[in-house]
Image (cartoon, rainbow, N blue to C red; front, side, top):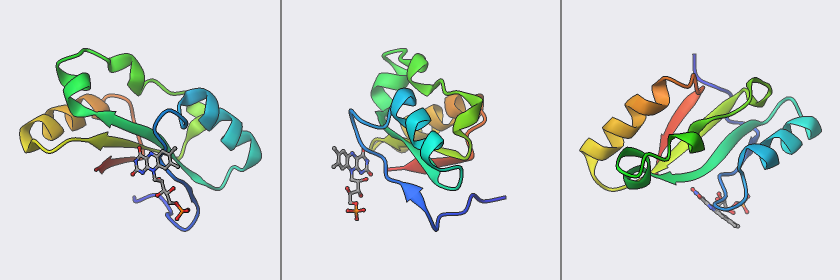
Length: 91
Ligand SMILES: Cc1cc2nc3c(=O)[nH]c(=O)nc-3n(C[C@H](O)[C@H](O)[C@H](O)COP(=O)(O)O)c2cc1C
């Protein structure tokens, strides 16, 4: 089941972290929330898996991965799959 994209809070680097998203979720239960873009290099090689954590109240939530290497994007998407995101967005 795909999340509803009619109303989203855009991904914004250095802005839409978990604290910011929880504030947005208090403002509306209807928007699809995006993480800030997470660089796949940092995720796969830099072990920055903590960046993927979010609170249950943030659903529906999409993670945005940034990268240009298809293998790294795939490896990062597999990591994201453990976290139960509603969407994995590739940038
Ligand atoms: C501070 C800031 C950070 C942004 N970071 C991202 C990002 O990480 N990924 C992305 O796809 N777009 C990013 N954008 C673009 C926004 O997601 C959005 O597409 C843009 O602000 C246009 O939105 P609007 O058409 O509602 O004005 C960023 C924009 C801003 C202002």
